[in-house]
Image (spheres, rainbow, N blue to C red):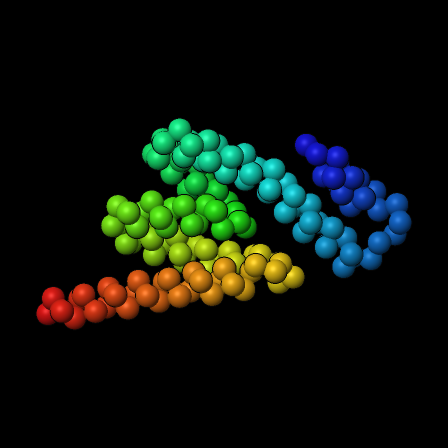
Length: 141
């Protein structure tokens, strides 16, 4: 556990500076994000290592775990979209796009500079995918 997390826990539990309840709640949110990051980041590193060793199946396992934990970086979503897209597994691509849209619209800080461009990119990708599926299903009729 990092020093940052220990310091946050101490501030929250002991409240030596008599922080307001709102301030303490903000500290709890920061603590939760830091703890979550410490759980998620090793998964991303393992996925990158597996990809570097050309072990796609192993990387998928780690990437999917990071998606389940609502990882706030685009790498995991982009990689899974790429892998599932190459396999023509459009249902999985749509699932990952929806997860990315949720994370970048609801969880990623609005002050983060890359939030809106990434969110818009995922929305456009999903719209294009849905449109192409609708076009295909109407041709099949």
